[in-house]
Length: 352
Image 1 (cartoon, rainbow, N blue to C red):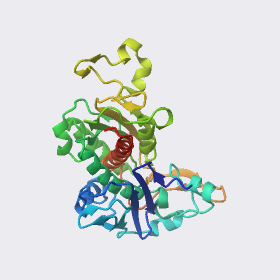
Image 2 (cartoon, rainbow, N blue to C red):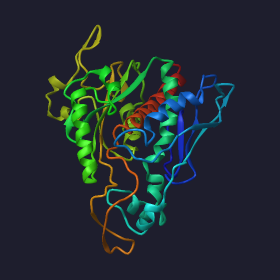
Image 3 (cartoon, rainbow, N blue to C red):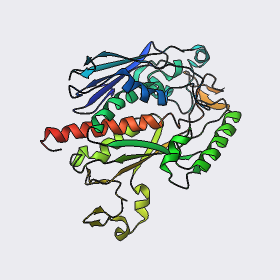
Image 4 (cartoon, rainbow, N blue to C red):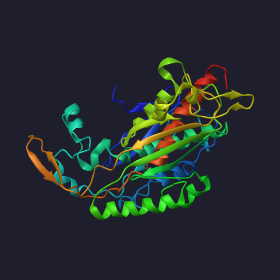
Protein backbone atom coordinates (compact mmCIF):
# COMPACT_ATOMS: atom_id res chain seq x y z
CA UNK A 1 0.00 0.00 0.00
CA UNK A 2 1.06 3.58 -0.50
CA UNK A 3 2.95 3.24 -3.79
CA UNK A 4 6.24 4.51 -2.34
CA UNK A 5 8.32 1.41 -3.19
CA UNK A 6 9.57 0.16 -6.55
CA UNK A 7 11.40 -2.95 -7.73
CA UNK A 8 11.53 -6.66 -6.93
CA UNK A 9 15.01 -7.86 -5.92
CA UNK A 10 16.58 -4.40 -6.05
CA UNK A 11 13.87 -2.46 -4.25
CA UNK A 12 13.77 1.22 -3.36
CA UNK A 13 11.47 3.18 -1.06
CA UNK A 14 11.65 6.98 -1.21
CA UNK A 15 10.39 9.22 1.59
CA UNK A 16 10.07 12.90 2.53
CA UNK A 17 8.35 16.09 1.38
CA UNK A 18 9.54 19.22 -0.40
CA UNK A 19 9.43 21.43 2.70
CA UNK A 20 9.84 18.74 5.35
CA UNK A 21 13.00 18.21 7.39
CA UNK A 22 14.66 15.90 4.88
CA UNK A 23 14.20 13.55 1.94
CA UNK A 24 15.78 10.20 1.28
CA UNK A 25 15.57 6.59 0.20
CA UNK A 26 15.98 3.05 1.51
CA UNK A 27 17.51 0.55 -0.91
CA UNK A 28 17.02 -3.15 -0.21
CA UNK A 29 18.65 -5.94 -2.19
CA UNK A 30 21.97 -4.32 -3.04
CA UNK A 31 24.63 -7.07 -3.28
CA UNK A 32 27.27 -7.14 -0.51
CA UNK A 33 30.99 -6.31 -0.76
CA UNK A 34 30.45 -3.61 -3.38
CA UNK A 35 32.56 -0.47 -3.05
CA UNK A 36 30.33 2.48 -2.13
CA UNK A 37 31.04 5.94 -0.76
CA UNK A 38 29.02 9.10 -0.28
CA UNK A 39 31.03 10.61 -3.14
CA UNK A 40 29.72 7.95 -5.53
CA UNK A 41 26.19 9.10 -4.76
CA UNK A 42 26.98 12.81 -4.50
CA UNK A 43 28.19 13.16 -8.08
CA UNK A 44 24.75 12.09 -9.31
CA UNK A 45 22.87 14.29 -6.83
CA UNK A 46 24.90 17.31 -7.93
CA UNK A 47 23.53 16.89 -11.45
CA UNK A 48 19.90 17.37 -10.31
CA UNK A 49 20.22 19.81 -7.41
CA UNK A 50 18.55 23.23 -7.76
CA UNK A 51 20.03 26.70 -7.64
CA UNK A 52 23.26 26.26 -9.60
CA UNK A 53 22.16 26.56 -13.23
CA UNK A 54 20.59 29.39 -15.22
CA UNK A 55 16.85 28.89 -15.60
CA UNK A 56 16.59 26.51 -12.63
CA UNK A 57 14.90 27.19 -9.31
CA UNK A 58 16.80 29.71 -7.16
CA UNK A 59 16.27 27.39 -4.18
CA UNK A 60 19.81 26.61 -3.07
CA UNK A 61 20.21 23.16 -1.62
CA UNK A 62 23.59 21.54 -1.03
CA UNK A 63 21.95 18.12 -1.26
CA UNK A 64 24.78 16.52 0.72
CA UNK A 65 23.98 12.85 1.15
CA UNK A 66 24.45 10.95 4.41
CA UNK A 67 24.73 7.16 4.44
CA UNK A 68 22.91 5.97 7.57
CA UNK A 69 23.14 2.20 7.12
CA UNK A 70 24.15 -0.68 4.88
CA UNK A 71 27.79 0.36 4.32
CA UNK A 72 30.75 -0.66 6.48
CA UNK A 73 34.37 0.29 5.84
CA UNK A 74 33.48 1.50 2.35
CA UNK A 75 31.65 -1.64 1.26
CA UNK A 76 27.98 -2.59 1.08
CA UNK A 77 26.95 -5.18 3.65
CA UNK A 78 23.92 -6.64 1.84
CA UNK A 79 21.57 -5.07 4.40
CA UNK A 80 19.23 -2.13 3.62
CA UNK A 81 21.05 1.06 2.65
CA UNK A 82 19.40 4.17 4.07
CA UNK A 83 20.31 7.55 2.57
CA UNK A 84 19.34 10.99 3.87
CA UNK A 85 19.52 14.51 2.42
CA UNK A 86 18.51 17.46 4.61
CA UNK A 87 16.24 20.21 3.27
CA UNK A 88 18.19 23.34 4.23
CA UNK A 89 16.94 26.21 2.05
CA UNK A 90 13.20 26.06 2.71
CA UNK A 91 10.87 29.08 2.40
CA UNK A 92 7.22 28.08 2.84
CA UNK A 93 5.85 31.64 3.11
CA UNK A 94 4.78 31.98 -0.58
CA UNK A 95 2.52 28.92 -0.13
CA UNK A 96 0.48 30.28 2.79
CA UNK A 97 -1.87 32.15 0.47
CA UNK A 98 -2.31 28.99 -1.63
CA UNK A 99 -3.15 26.54 1.16
CA UNK A 100 -6.88 26.67 0.36
CA UNK A 101 -6.46 26.80 -3.43
CA UNK A 102 -5.97 24.00 -5.96
CA UNK A 103 -3.12 24.98 -8.29
CA UNK A 104 -3.70 24.10 -12.00
CA UNK A 105 -1.49 21.30 -13.29
CA UNK A 106 -0.47 20.25 -9.77
CA UNK A 107 -1.51 17.29 -7.63
CA UNK A 108 -3.28 19.50 -5.05
CA UNK A 109 -6.81 18.45 -6.03
CA UNK A 110 -6.05 14.75 -6.38
CA UNK A 111 -4.10 14.47 -3.09
CA UNK A 112 -6.95 16.21 -1.30
CA UNK A 113 -9.46 13.86 -2.95
CA UNK A 114 -7.46 10.76 -1.98
CA UNK A 115 -6.30 11.58 1.56
CA UNK A 116 -8.52 14.45 2.72
CA UNK A 117 -5.35 16.27 3.76
CA UNK A 118 -2.27 17.54 1.96
CA UNK A 119 1.02 19.27 2.61
CA UNK A 120 0.57 22.44 0.56
CA UNK A 121 4.17 23.62 1.10
CA UNK A 122 5.89 23.27 -2.24
CA UNK A 123 3.69 20.36 -3.27
CA UNK A 124 4.72 18.13 -0.38
CA UNK A 125 5.25 14.55 -1.48
CA UNK A 126 4.19 15.37 -5.06
CA UNK A 127 7.10 17.79 -5.46
CA UNK A 128 10.05 17.09 -7.74
CA UNK A 129 12.09 17.22 -4.53
CA UNK A 130 11.05 13.58 -4.05
CA UNK A 131 13.35 12.63 -6.92
CA UNK A 132 16.43 13.18 -4.71
CA UNK A 133 15.87 9.66 -3.37
CA UNK A 134 15.49 8.21 -6.86
CA UNK A 135 18.77 9.74 -8.06
CA UNK A 136 20.60 8.55 -4.95
CA UNK A 137 19.29 5.01 -5.49
CA UNK A 138 20.15 5.28 -9.18
CA UNK A 139 23.76 6.02 -8.30
CA UNK A 140 23.96 2.67 -6.52
CA UNK A 141 22.14 0.90 -9.34
CA UNK A 142 24.64 2.35 -11.80
CA UNK A 143 27.51 0.83 -9.81
CA UNK A 144 25.85 -2.57 -10.15
CA UNK A 145 25.50 -2.03 -13.90
CA UNK A 146 29.09 -0.81 -14.26
CA UNK A 147 30.33 -4.25 -13.20
CA UNK A 148 28.68 -5.56 -16.37
CA UNK A 149 29.90 -2.51 -18.40
CA UNK A 150 26.28 -1.39 -18.89
CA UNK A 151 26.05 2.38 -19.39
CA UNK A 152 22.98 4.62 -19.08
CA UNK A 153 23.08 8.15 -20.51
CA UNK A 154 20.43 10.74 -21.27
CA UNK A 155 20.25 13.85 -23.41
CA UNK A 156 17.76 16.49 -24.46
CA UNK A 157 16.23 15.92 -27.88
CA UNK A 158 13.65 18.69 -27.72
CA UNK A 159 12.76 21.69 -25.57
CA UNK A 160 10.01 24.21 -26.18
CA UNK A 161 9.40 22.83 -29.67
CA UNK A 162 13.06 23.19 -30.73
CA UNK A 163 14.50 19.80 -31.71
CA UNK A 164 18.07 18.58 -31.99
CA UNK A 165 18.89 18.10 -35.67
CA UNK A 166 22.06 16.08 -35.16
CA UNK A 167 23.49 13.54 -32.73
CA UNK A 168 26.92 14.66 -31.56
CA UNK A 169 27.46 12.71 -28.34
CA UNK A 170 30.57 14.67 -27.16
CA UNK A 171 28.44 17.84 -27.39
CA UNK A 172 26.11 16.57 -24.64
CA UNK A 173 28.58 17.51 -21.94
CA UNK A 174 29.41 20.86 -23.52
CA UNK A 175 26.13 22.67 -22.86
CA UNK A 176 24.01 22.89 -19.72
CA UNK A 177 20.89 21.51 -21.45
CA UNK A 178 22.70 18.25 -22.26
CA UNK A 179 21.71 18.54 -25.91
CA UNK A 180 23.65 16.63 -28.62
CA UNK A 181 23.18 19.58 -31.01
CA UNK A 182 25.08 22.70 -29.95
CA UNK A 183 23.15 25.07 -32.22
CA UNK A 184 19.82 23.69 -31.08
CA UNK A 185 20.97 24.12 -27.48
CA UNK A 186 21.53 27.84 -28.10
CA UNK A 187 18.04 28.22 -29.51
CA UNK A 188 16.62 26.29 -26.56
CA UNK A 189 18.37 28.71 -24.17
CA UNK A 190 16.75 31.65 -25.92
CA UNK A 191 13.35 29.98 -25.67
CA UNK A 192 13.88 29.43 -21.94
CA UNK A 193 14.72 33.08 -21.41
CA UNK A 194 11.64 34.18 -23.35
CA UNK A 195 9.44 31.93 -21.21
CA UNK A 196 11.08 33.17 -18.01
CA UNK A 197 10.42 36.80 -18.90
CA UNK A 198 6.76 35.96 -19.52
CA UNK A 199 6.52 34.07 -16.23
CA UNK A 200 5.78 30.88 -18.17
CA UNK A 201 7.39 27.44 -18.51
CA UNK A 202 8.41 24.88 -21.13
CA UNK A 203 8.42 21.11 -21.62
CA UNK A 204 10.47 18.88 -23.89
CA UNK A 205 11.68 15.38 -24.79
CA UNK A 206 14.50 13.47 -23.10
CA UNK A 207 16.08 10.43 -24.74
CA UNK A 208 17.74 7.70 -22.67
CA UNK A 209 20.32 5.38 -24.23
CA UNK A 210 21.52 2.12 -22.65
CA UNK A 211 24.73 0.74 -24.09
CA UNK A 212 26.10 -2.80 -23.76
CA UNK A 213 23.00 -4.26 -22.12
CA UNK A 214 23.21 -8.05 -22.50
CA UNK A 215 20.45 -10.03 -24.16
CA UNK A 216 18.07 -11.85 -21.84
CA UNK A 217 17.00 -9.22 -19.29
CA UNK A 218 13.26 -8.98 -18.70
CA UNK A 219 10.43 -11.31 -17.78
CA UNK A 220 7.57 -12.65 -19.92
CA UNK A 221 4.06 -11.23 -19.99
CA UNK A 222 3.48 -8.74 -17.14
CA UNK A 223 7.09 -7.96 -16.12
CA UNK A 224 8.31 -7.20 -19.61
CA UNK A 225 11.45 -5.06 -19.55
CA UNK A 226 9.79 -2.18 -21.41
CA UNK A 227 6.75 -2.42 -19.11
CA UNK A 228 8.89 -1.96 -16.01
CA UNK A 229 10.90 0.79 -17.72
CA UNK A 230 7.63 2.53 -18.61
CA UNK A 231 6.39 2.26 -15.03
CA UNK A 232 9.67 3.63 -13.67
CA UNK A 233 9.81 6.55 -16.07
CA UNK A 234 6.09 7.32 -15.97
CA UNK A 235 6.27 7.46 -12.17
CA UNK A 236 8.34 10.65 -12.50
CA UNK A 237 5.90 13.48 -11.92
CA UNK A 238 6.59 15.55 -15.05
CA UNK A 239 6.68 12.61 -17.51
CA UNK A 240 3.53 12.26 -19.63
CA UNK A 241 4.55 9.65 -22.19
CA UNK A 242 7.23 7.14 -23.18
CA UNK A 243 8.42 5.54 -26.42
CA UNK A 244 10.68 2.56 -27.07
CA UNK A 245 12.74 2.52 -30.26
CA UNK A 246 10.60 3.72 -33.16
CA UNK A 247 7.76 4.28 -30.70
CA UNK A 248 4.65 5.83 -32.21
CA UNK A 249 6.42 6.01 -35.57
CA UNK A 250 6.03 2.21 -35.76
CA UNK A 251 2.27 2.71 -36.13
CA UNK A 252 2.89 4.31 -39.53
CA UNK A 253 5.25 1.62 -40.85
CA UNK A 254 4.81 -1.53 -42.89
CA UNK A 255 5.91 -4.71 -41.15
CA UNK A 256 8.72 -4.99 -43.68
CA UNK A 257 9.97 -1.57 -42.52
CA UNK A 258 9.47 -2.07 -38.80
CA UNK A 259 11.09 -5.49 -38.37
CA UNK A 260 14.83 -5.33 -37.58
CA UNK A 261 16.82 -7.71 -39.83
CA UNK A 262 19.15 -10.02 -37.90
CA UNK A 263 22.53 -10.98 -39.33
CA UNK A 264 25.68 -12.76 -38.13
CA UNK A 265 26.91 -9.52 -36.52
CA UNK A 266 23.60 -8.84 -34.78
CA UNK A 267 20.65 -6.60 -35.58
CA UNK A 268 21.13 -4.45 -38.67
CA UNK A 269 18.90 -1.64 -37.41
CA UNK A 270 17.18 -0.93 -34.12
CA UNK A 271 13.57 0.20 -34.46
CA UNK A 272 12.75 -2.28 -31.67
CA UNK A 273 14.81 -0.15 -29.30
CA UNK A 274 16.78 -3.11 -27.96
CA UNK A 275 13.79 -5.07 -26.61
CA UNK A 276 11.77 -7.90 -28.19
CA UNK A 277 9.06 -9.90 -26.43
CA UNK A 278 9.74 -7.92 -23.27
CA UNK A 279 13.35 -9.15 -23.14
CA UNK A 280 16.53 -7.26 -24.06
CA UNK A 281 18.03 -8.40 -27.36
CA UNK A 282 21.59 -7.15 -26.94
CA UNK A 283 21.19 -4.02 -29.05
CA UNK A 284 21.22 -0.55 -27.52
CA UNK A 285 18.08 0.18 -25.53
CA UNK A 286 16.59 3.47 -26.73
CA UNK A 287 13.83 5.22 -24.78
CA UNK A 288 12.14 8.60 -25.10
CA UNK A 289 10.02 10.49 -22.58
CA UNK A 290 7.73 13.49 -23.06
CA UNK A 291 8.16 15.97 -20.22
CA UNK A 292 5.41 18.49 -19.47
CA UNK A 293 6.10 22.14 -18.59
CA UNK A 294 6.51 23.13 -14.94
CA UNK A 295 2.94 23.88 -13.75
CA UNK A 296 4.04 26.58 -11.26
CA UNK A 297 3.98 29.77 -13.33
CA UNK A 298 3.41 33.45 -12.54
CA UNK A 299 0.99 33.84 -15.46
CA UNK A 300 -2.54 34.33 -14.10
CA UNK A 301 -4.57 31.10 -14.09
CA UNK A 302 -8.14 30.19 -13.26
CA UNK A 303 -8.90 27.60 -10.59
CA UNK A 304 -11.10 26.98 -7.53
CA UNK A 305 -10.59 26.94 -3.76
CA UNK A 306 -11.59 24.22 -1.28
CA UNK A 307 -15.16 25.54 -1.36
CA UNK A 308 -15.14 25.04 -5.17
CA UNK A 309 -15.48 28.78 -5.71
CA UNK A 310 -13.68 30.28 -8.75
CA UNK A 311 -10.48 32.18 -8.06
CA UNK A 312 -7.54 33.47 -10.12
CA UNK A 313 -3.96 32.94 -8.99
CA UNK A 314 -0.39 33.77 -9.92
CA UNK A 315 2.11 31.30 -8.51
CA UNK A 316 5.01 32.85 -6.63
CA UNK A 317 7.94 31.06 -5.03
CA UNK A 318 11.04 29.51 -6.54
CA UNK A 319 10.55 27.31 -9.58
CA UNK A 320 12.37 26.02 -12.66
CA UNK A 321 11.39 27.30 -16.11
CA UNK A 322 11.64 23.74 -17.44
CA UNK A 323 12.12 20.31 -15.83
CA UNK A 324 14.97 19.87 -18.33
CA UNK A 325 17.90 19.37 -17.71
CA UNK A 326 17.43 18.53 -14.02
CA UNK A 327 15.02 15.71 -14.90
CA UNK A 328 17.61 14.01 -17.13
CA UNK A 329 19.54 12.33 -14.27
CA UNK A 330 16.20 11.32 -12.72
CA UNK A 331 15.33 9.48 -15.94
CA UNK A 332 18.74 7.82 -15.94
CA UNK A 333 18.25 6.79 -12.32
CA UNK A 334 14.91 5.09 -12.92
CA UNK A 335 16.25 3.22 -15.97
CA UNK A 336 19.31 2.13 -13.94
CA UNK A 337 17.11 0.91 -11.06
CA UNK A 338 14.97 -1.18 -13.45
CA UNK A 339 17.99 -2.67 -15.20
CA UNK A 340 19.78 -3.46 -11.93
CA UNK A 341 16.64 -5.20 -10.67
CA UNK A 342 16.29 -7.29 -13.83
CA UNK A 343 20.00 -8.06 -13.89
CA UNK A 344 19.78 -9.46 -10.36
CA UNK A 345 16.64 -11.40 -11.30
CA UNK A 346 18.51 -12.93 -14.23
CA UNK A 347 21.44 -13.88 -12.02
CA UNK A 348 19.01 -15.48 -9.58
CA UNK A 349 18.02 -17.81 -12.43
CA UNK A 350 21.65 -18.81 -12.78
CA UNK A 351 21.91 -16.79 -16.00
CA UNK A 352 24.07 -13.75 -16.66
